[in-house]
Amino acid sequence: TIKSAPHSTYCFFDINMQLNLQREAEINNTMEQALKDREFVVYLQPKVNLHDNSLVGAEALVRWIRDGIIIMPGDFIPIFENNGFVVNLDFFVYEEVCKILKEWMKQGKKLVPISINVSRVHLHDEKFVDNIKSLVDSYGIPYNLLELELTESIFLSNTEAALTAMRQLRGLGFGVSIDDFGAGYSSLNLLKDMATDVIKLDKEFFGHDNMQREEQIIVSSIISMAKQLNMKVLSEGVETQNQSDFLRSVRCDMAQGYLYSRPIPVGDFEKLI
Ligand code: C2E
Ligand code: MG
Ligand code: MG
Ligand code: MG
Image (cartoon, rainbow, N blue to C red):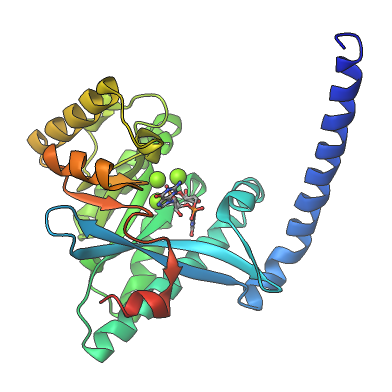
């Protein structure tokens, strides 16, 4: 078996690589038309206050719906980050979110902020903050109804640009948060420079129901540190009541996860308001 392994492994990778290349080529060839045809759809996932389970916000998460099949962002965002199309897609998503908020304002609905994901690619454009501002202004949306999520990894690869964008956004009054906190290399020493309102604890911390003692210590320490830095903490990927009970006991502020709701179409989300 040892002898045949390299051969079969080679075949396996070869076929997969070919499939990946085919899929990537197909995505490259269809993405622009798909955007025009409105195949990209914004879903909303509720964020809840852990103390009373009330709805306090939403995260906009994009889906590609093609011939009735839902394609998840993990299958196309990395490709769009490489070919640059993520900029077009994100501004489409941001505009959809403005339209949603505008509609809620018009209908007199209770307003909750919606967060949007910021790709690292945006930071290569020094007009990024201006562009967001113009878009939001054109819809007349108060800045505090939008929260921009910057993933922790952006701060490590592109520290200065990320810190600058974050300060500018926050200076204007947008909400800002650090996504996937604790997932990669620790950016603890950067926290002091991060003008953030919210830290989103990565869902890896909640990958299984019975958190180990060590994990509990780490999570509760991050939460108490954040509190002293005047930041709020939201735990992502909360799936069980045990996790939610633990998080409440260590005074985590907010949660997001399948325990409360999956990301859902906007119409379904509106029924929750
Ligand atoms: P993210 O921003 O960290 O979003 C949270 C992800 O966790 C979402 O995956 C969400 O569906 C998933 N999630 C929520 N609750 C649970 C749970 O209880 N258990 C588990 N296992 N997962 C949970 P999704 O929607 O597949 O998005 C994946 C990533 O793709 C996002 O991670 C974000 O980085 C990126 N993404 C999604 N939409 C956009 C977008 O419009 N623009 C950009 N640039 N990136 C996006
Ligand atoms: Mg996010
Ligand atoms: Mg995240
Ligand atoms: Mg992520």
